[in-house]
Each structure stands twice: as C-alpha cells, then as structure tokens.
Image (cartoon, rainbow, N blue to C red; front, side, top):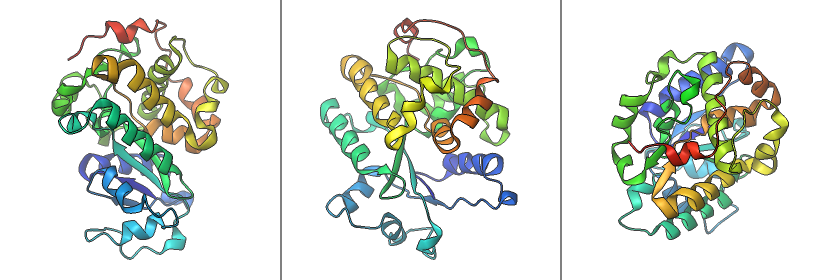
Length: 271
C-alpha cells in the first residue's frame, strides 16, 4: 500500500507508477490512500503504542478512503510525505525540526511494520525538478528554503517534466539517474557517474538507509548552515529499493551524466 500526503499530484504519480511498473495484467496490485495531512499527525497517533497496526490506524480516520480495506490484503506500507521544512520555520528551529524528522524516520523505518517513510525535498513536486539536458542535472537543484512556499511556481518555470501524465518508462529511468547523481554528490562530497549498483547498494540495505543519509547530509551541509535544501524526489529510490539491481541497470543505460565536483551545489544559484 502506498500512502500519500495529498491527493492531486500524488494521484498523478501513483497512476504513472502503477501503469508502468505494476500493471494489473501481471497480477500485481497497489492499494493507494491519501492521508490528507502531514506525517507528524500520523506519528502522533502511533508514537506511544508501537503495537498499533498502521493500516487499522489509517482506516479509522474520519475521512479515510480505505475504510473497507481488508487488512490481510496489505503486505507492505510505504509512506510518501513532504519534508516541508519551510512550513515550520516560524514555529520550530532547524535543530528541533531536524530532531522531529529523525524521530519520524526512526518510527517509520520498516514497510512490514509501521511503514517505511519516503520524504520529498521539499515536496512532491520535486519529481518534476529536472531539465531534459543531463548536463544540467544540478541546475537550480539547490533551493533557498523560505522560497519553497512558492515551489510549485518555481517548478513551472524550470522543469521540462511538468506533465506527469506524459511520463513513460524512459522518463522514469532518466529521473531515477538524475536523483541518484544528486544524492551521490550530496552523501559522498564527491561526484562521479554512478554506473555500478554496488556503489549504492548499501543505500537500500537495512530498511532503506538512504532516507536517513539524505536527511543527515541535507541538514549538516545545507539546512543548518545556509537555510537551503537540495531538491530530491523519493519515488525513484522507492522503485530501485523495490526492484533492485535489475531496475538500476535498466536506468543507467538511459543517461550519461556530466562529470563534475561537489561544487555544483555550491555554485548553483538559488531561484
């Protein structure tokens, strides 16, 4: 089951992923649900009782869209929510917000238990944050966090992939590799074209450690010292986590990215 924070763009993402990667003709089925609130509200519902069943908690919400779901029909739960640090700048310090994010990642760290949390930086629209030129894989990737209140408008100006309904398999391959390159640079302080799955295999071991690595490096390198954030989408990582090396190998043949150094982030101008 995939649980999304919102409904509109998230439904477009779901429809695209389902059509391309989980076609019903293969006997595969994904159950979807929109939580219609921030992940912190869900965390508050379950944080004091680790024995709660996440599916039953979701079903009991007054506006739940899965009230009639049969529990045994759900084998995994993946939670897709926004980082949204800019939305809490007036009420929480960066340190406190980082602490909250880490609590969320510690709680929602297993798709077979309370669910696995995948964060969009800064929000779901980050899947569109890319141009068609692979040499521009870092172009405008670094964002000044207060500006992210207008992130949807920013994306409309810079993206070559605004219409998710037009995404095909090759588009997803391309976006996957762009996000891998950005993340490799973020996590490792160095840039190289990642063409070997073994270089990133550890990202997807131990319940997708990549989600914690990304948050740690975002906070240390950009959020705390510069009030900035690197645009990253979790959906490509979900696909690689789910399908593994086979999917990565399909993706890597679609793109040859421009070699550059970590200074790409440092030199990227904020929008």
